Length: 260
Image 1 (cartoon, rainbow, N blue to C red):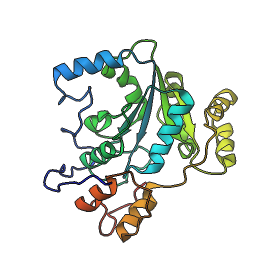
Image 2: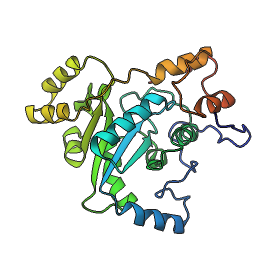
Image 3: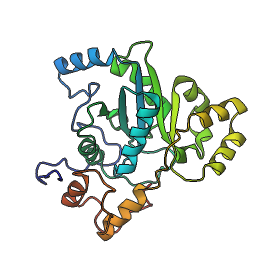
Image 4: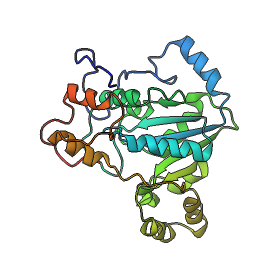
């Protein structure tokens, strides 16, 4: 059953990367109470295997949840933290739904997953969202134990051009990748890795690919289907489609450059 959404109480849209309060404050969010932050910090200090899952989530869809589930199972993750981007660095022209809208959709999608959280770190920071900057910040932000291991949850489509990510080699020294297939034929992607990285790093990334079915659904296709009013059942988590329709987030012609 979908979750009813009252349009008058839903968060108002904000410009891409706008700073401010976002619903569902994570422990690191300034809006969280001191007592709640203290309890959360003690809880997170006990963890040893945490996954970071970044992206636009515009909108979050069931493919994203499949990626998180596959990664958590493959690496034995105790927590998966979704980090919605303020602005993806690889598509600076991209026009996103507001940060508060995307956080609200994520929180609807993550209901029932007690070990999955949303952190608004990149939205609070605003500007271009570089993964390595977030990785360098989260240990102190979350109060992690020095022995805690961080895992970067990726769809295999992110491997195309991964060598051009900010400080890509340093990033791989700070975090362990978990890669879930987003295309059926990974041959071209693996060839690109061998061409762009050292043999050791290319082999490490290839070993990080989870042996599971590929997730072929894309947010761009869902946005277009929502605009036309014919999105297929089962593509959006419970409550997310109703929220989108009530808010009219993707109604009408798409503005500016295509979303990713």
